[in-house]
Length: 429
Image (cartoon, rainbow, N blue to C red; front, side, top):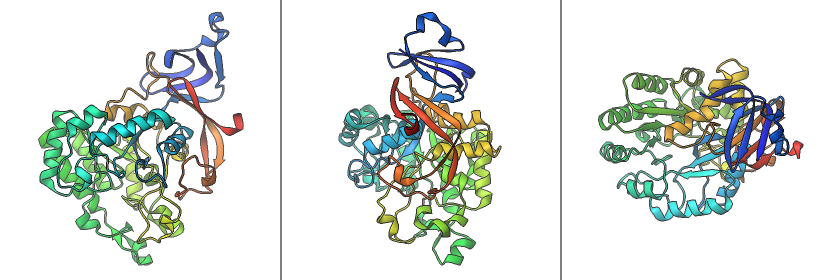
């Protein structure tokens, strides 16, 4: 058995306060004050969490682990090593691998691979269409039976309304969430950043905000018609936030996520960071950034998801027009999220909810809690620790981040998965 003692426990919806966490056989046995004083627990392995925050392991709804097919960017081993270093004990991996995760053979391969190489729990997300080509539906029932927790063509939006309607109907029959990359490519075209004064000043092709909220509007209408569980990925526009807010009030089964780069940066950052600030959806204007933060605070946006998208260094050197979209985020998400807390934009409890119980609830995963009987997935945080982002020290195989050199406050000290330490901050070794 193990006892994490002396810390402040924040288990959203269940427990907040000074307490000890007793772990046995990979599960939480008890969370209560005074356990450390019990004589019958005198000889259990102890982890001193005095002055630290003890929370459920984070759950990431949206990451790209790249394996199979793009191992030069990331692998399940390196991606989950990055995850646990960032406090994430559960990672849901997108299907844009090679081959695309559109059938049970690929899903089975990913699950088997995780058994031998992963540091965290990994849940595959299957493709909506074969090859994510937008033409023919994948077999959702088979994907679910094989272990997929949702379907998505993330990065390649389903442009055809009729095929998206059929996808939602099929997913609704299985109570399987559809994770929606909302982009109308007729509007976004070949843009490389947000359309606005900055893109025009730099002479770079822009991607207007209506490319996102037009598709959100379409898919809210389809979700209302089909009753599907619709999850909006990486929400980035003020108008999109308002659409999700209204849809929730109207009873649509809709949830949403935001990525830390979208609540931290605006498109003013792109000339400074270049292709390391190129992502899809792109960084927007301050009005949009403020809206997604407000949406996080008031519950319109359910979860914080990293959209961890690793690329090789040489790929990001191709310039704004040709470099691939995406930035890594598993190892900086906590510090950036706590930045909102330090600014008074969201409460600490709300921030932790968005990283733990709320994303678990979106996909119905048995994660994100320290309730007795739950898997002992635990993240221990030093909320006062300041650290400098150094990509060369990342556990991810890739380095494509705009946050190199930033000083962040709040750092993971230790991460447990099923009661086993899978990460410990180097200074404490």
